[in-house]
Length: 229
Image (cartoon, rainbow, N blue to C red; front, side):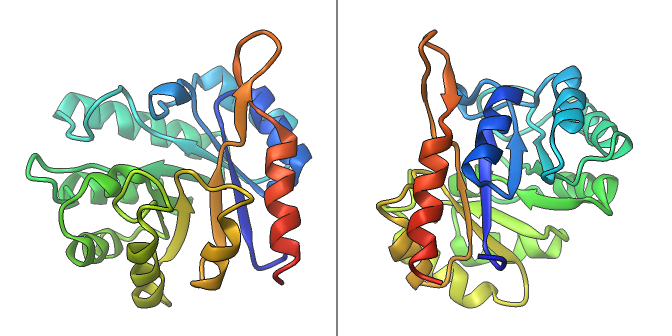
């Protein structure tokens, strides 16, 4: 299991704690997961840093909707990246698109340059793009370390064949982090095509009606993967 990444997409500090309890070895912290995730509050980032020793990556997304950003929004993104670097986060999760569905290389490169030497993941904005191979090359050219994707489809099951292609052609160039509907029922198939990094929230409504990671859902994925390694 040492060569596998199990990243819990946590929409709160408590979800992050639950994810680690379930066995996740990396956390992506965000809020507003119901709408695709947004940048968490600074105080939550600091609190998560205080409570966790697990590597903490922060989603940097200033608003809902498209991934086409104005200059003011880009400046806010860069400010948030700098904050994450200054407080010692392990990584950030970023990305920007053009109106035609291509990667906005200028803005993404600015984010990457601001974030280094933190680990940099290009998020699922990639799944709204328009050309699998060209988009992959652009993300790599921008200097990202990891690509979070469901294979440019709604979820990993629908994007399975494209994920297979991405894993095959990306070796030694960028790490493919499969995300979007990952669970204990499909990790075996993903593992068999070469995926070694898995992204999931494992979330469900708790007793108070709040969406929160359930550690058992993370654990069930890990148990399945342990039968494969």
